[in-house]
Amino acid sequence: MTRAAVGPALRPGEFIALIALLMSLVALSIDAMLPALPAIGADLGVLHRNDAQFVITAVFLGLGLGQILFGPLSDRIGRRAAIHAGLALFMAGCLVSIFAPTFAVMVAGRVLQGIGVAAPRIVTIAMVRDQYEGRRMARLMSFAMAVFILVPIIAPALGQGILWFGDWRAIFGTIFAIAAIALAWFSLRQPETLPAVRRRPLSPRDIGRAVLEVVRTRAAFGYTLAAGCASAPFLAYLSSAQQIFQDAYRTGALFPLWFGVLALAFGCASLLNGRLVMKHGMRRLSRAATATSVLVSAAACGLAVPFEGLPPFGLFLGYMLVAFFCIGLLFGNLNALAMKPLGHIAGVGAAVVASLSTFIAVPAGALVGHRFDGTVYPLIAAFAVFGAGTLAAMRWAESGGGG
View 1 (cartoon, rainbow, N blue to C red):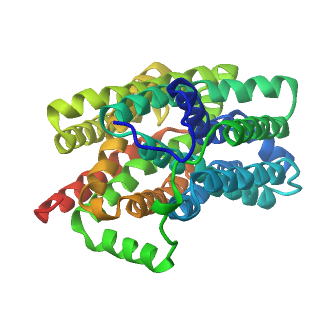
View 2: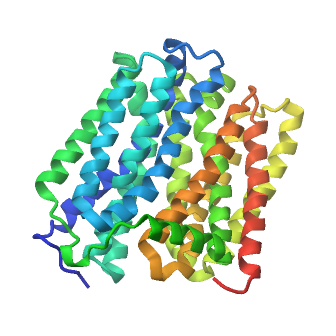
């Protein structure tokens, strides 16, 4: 069943391509920068090499702030205005980073990019919900996600390719240009999908109430904690991936290839999850994926000992493929479980759950990434420890009998 939009709706093919481009700006702004981290640190006078990781974690911090802002804001001012504002902030952040004279200014620009890119990330889902429902919505989102999953696979290669012809500032310039194309396409072609009669006033009190309800609802808060714990080692990986692959394992220009292989494992699990969850259920599948990740990570820690924390590359890659497949099964399910008791405040509830889980993951993941010492011990231990935390949070969420 299709819902009525304010203006003539785009054809499904063009709409899928547009929302996939808008959603992909998040992954593009993170993953394309990974090969450039050493150059950014050197040019901007970073004293400790691990500090360059803040180029990555700053985006996630901004994303957490932006999601809780743009979700409710789009219900008040409409989807088009919210995405316009978000893309403008994102592009402004790109310009700040391009012309940053110091590392602190660079990080500030990255936070601004994260706040801005939260709008296309979260509001595009609302746009789909405005126009479609049921199987048509699920089918359309699956096509969009298939395109979206390709971006983390190719983004590091894009960044590496740009570095062959220019410097790291050219990567930000390219991302700015892609955002400008997305903004022009969206402005010219996409009609408003939220009629004025369906808009709701923006109330800080309502957001505060939603935060309190999430925190007070055992199932919602427990699964939000679980989502934050599951995301922490993933964020730690993104922060330290360049150092692990290029500094520790000396993969050189092949770093984007191996990064893309792991991203493909994550994407395949995300696509397969839709079929598996119908057979096994969200809770059972999430518990199995988390338990597998914990056990495999504990075993990997033990296997790394004889190699002084740096096992053969093939062994490490095999472990990461399993860990990423498990994480790919978790993300969507944990967020869906957190939202299950929040149907009456679905819009603002989704924004709160996404922001809270991000705020849990960012400091934890940044701390682990910053502990990189030339070995893979910190990362593998993070998958084991935070995996155990995910299981504990899930058990606590389910012990209350609700959700």
